[in-house]
Amino acid sequence: MLNNLGTVAYCTNNPVLSVANWCFDNYRTIGKFRRETVRPLPIKPDGEPTKEELKLYKRARREVEDYNAQLEQKNYRTTEAMYVANKYADEKRFWIPWSFDYRSRIYPQVTSMSPQGTDFDKSLLYFYEEGPINAYWLAFQVATTYGLDKATMQERIDWVKDNTELITQIAKDPIGNMSLWSDTSEPWTFLAACFEYHSCCIAQTKNTSGLPCGIDATQSGIQHLSALTLDAESAAKVNVLPTSAPVDGYKTVAEASLKYIEDKEVHPFIDRKVSKRCTMCLPYGLTRDSARSYIRDALKETELDLSVPGRLTEITKAIYEKAIPEIFPGPVAVMKWLQSSAKKIMETQEYIQWTTPSGFIVQQDLRVSESTRIRTRLMGSIVDCQVGQGWGNKDVKHHVSALAPNVIHALDAALIQLTFVCWDKPFTVIHDCVLARSCDMDELSRDIRLQFAEMYSENVLKDWADEVGVEIPQSLIKHTLDIEQVNGSLYFFC
Image (tube, one colour):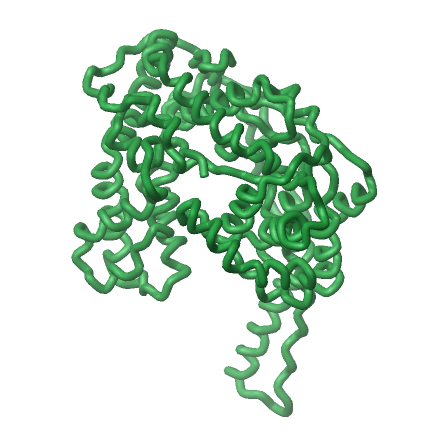
């Protein structure tokens, strides 16, 4: 699979690069494309300013100076991406090297123009080997990147049909019509999709396409946990089972939390965005402190007053301690069992090792970092620092916190590996997201469901438990899920 991925050739999406060059030269920031310019210093008050006026002036000046001093850091990622993109703009084709980490997760070995980079990075990549046009999947890519990723498939296609004039305006004059695309969900990949859809399906100046079209798993961690335990209740909430419209687990958690929040003033602010990161990180050993931080960050973008004593605590308790275990009891139980299993394994083992369904051997060997404290001086000040001296004994605490996420990441990777092991067409991957040409998307959509069903037709959790030497509690396996039903789920990856 890794060799197949490494032989995929790319070229630069030059229509997108042309717009990016204009934005770079004219200091326009769009999404993750950061191109900030120097801010002018505030004007010093005339005459003899009061003490308060002088204080305000100095504060304002310091803020501007601090901002300007950090400009290079703020703009660096965009500057680097633009340098690399322009360097490769005229190359007929190029390739990207890939590797596995110790869990077999797949990563590109590049820092710019990465398939796993920002929305802007991804928009610059185009498959060199083009294929026949599939208008349905090109329209899907347009609508999804616009921000309709929670809409039904038919609603997405209908939106594109109803907005051909908008797409045409953007494709013909992206700079003059920047306001039409710059504030969308994924502005740069949306722009790339508009260029492609217009050329292939509206103006019909092209008869082949190499635009990467992507489908994304719905809360992949919970999908895997529900399959591991054959838990139909959880599987139904993350689109493993067929539904007429995509099910939104984040929204379900947010709605369930409201009955545990007595402060009615808070209710209008609790939406899927507030509960998303907590729910998404559930399979990865989410702690209460992390949940509180995620919720606070999401609510900072709203007008809710978090200075009210106890308000954030009440919201965190409602989402983390009440709603998530209520909506996803099976996955929560598996996560806790994996953590307790790590403690048991580490009583007799130096590390934890298991084999994934794709045959990759994962070795979780986490150790305490040994270091020496050095006290020295720098420019007249005393500095304390630690110098690494290698690795010491096993880090049991780290093993406990890392096992659940590593098991899920390894299963994510195994599904991707099994899906693409025999592929000879262009594709790329982003952990739980897969991309291919529009002409290959029907096959890809079918294959990833087939591989998921086949992978979990075996008792994956029992195989894992037997290999690491622990026993599965009988209550953990629900036996309510027919895994073959995933083949009929339109929104499993969408």
